[in-house]
Length: 153
Image (cartoon, rainbow, N blue to C red; front, side, top):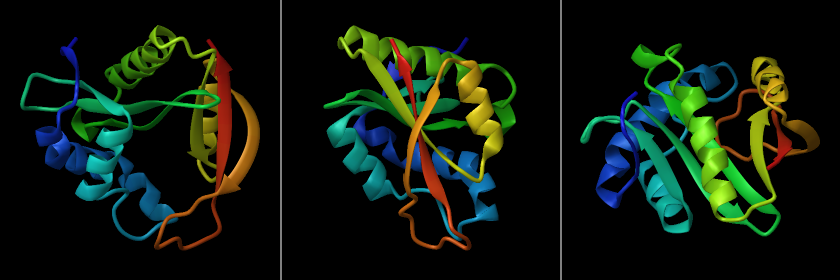
């Protein structure tokens, strides 16, 4: 397993590239990239990215933070060349542990309603659908909603 570490600001360009490569599947309902470097830098100011990979390489990442209702993780991204090797699952476990370590009683994720495979994947891991909200990203080519899923820790 590649080493796990927290991202630094100088990781932002590589994080941005990895996230956009991993989220190319969103092009089926959205034009353009998933994120930008300023967006990644803003996320680094609020929470943190957990990374897998030998520096300076980043094989996979996940964003985590604490919110009033508990922990949150998102932007789970695995280098397309490394997908299927279990790195995503390792990062889900790391994100949940990060939230537990900060005494969060639950963790929330948001997945696009047009990605049913993600909804069933997270349901198998103990996540329950709670509600939906608008998917507020530029360049949508069809109506998409976020499904908020929560797991007790």
